Image 1 (tube, helix red, strand yellow):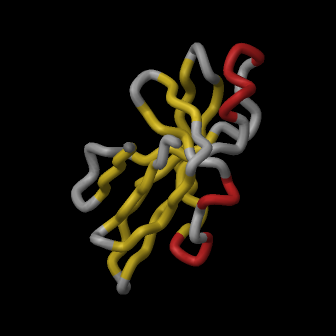
Image 2 (image 1 turned 180 degrees about the horizontal axis):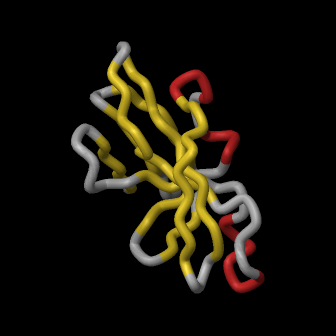
Length: 100
């Protein structure tokens, strides 16, 4: 069975056996997040294919990683399978995503 984990600064912030992969990014279902680490960010971006993404800042041991994760709350029809699912910005220092 596939398994995915997201860590930020060494803290496991999401873990699941059910996820979606889009454009090389693992999208975690909302139920897999450890919500206490997440705070909404004012940042948004627009993807012409998926729609508007909102971001989260992830805080671990008083260390903030701004815009470490994003979510499409209302994706375009072709990407409804990731509605509400969260992906992590692997290029940010301290952010790691793995799957088995």
